[in-house]
Image (cartoon, rainbow, N blue to C red; front, side, top):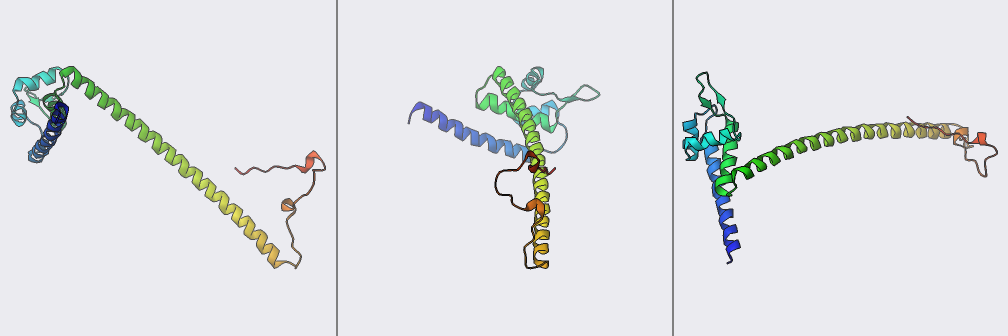
Length: 181
């Protein structure tokens, strides 16, 4: 097996292992806020590493009245992502910053696309409703014509506006257009 295949295999197995660890950690966590010591212990890292991530703007814990850092679930999730990127994938801090910015841009674009899809879906629903009404009106007119045809005499009577006209128009006044709204 080549070096690339071995490295790829190790990354895949490490990826599975990290996902298992993260799922276990999420399961064990309680809702609420965590101190910096609890967070550092949770990830088996030094408290200074957590502070460094905060200083670089990757996480923004709240502060208590006594200025103690209070890490929320979102902070912990973000820290898990940072740890995965740095420790498992070997991405440096500048790379982590780019990955996080790109994820934020992708999420924004996804929201915008979802909004466009929702608006388009609503417009299509309105158009479908208008088409349905037009078909119902046309069907009603045809039914009325058919009923008039069968209830009358043996001679078929076609309303003048539906009477076919063969040959060229006699004048420009013979052309009449109707538009449904």
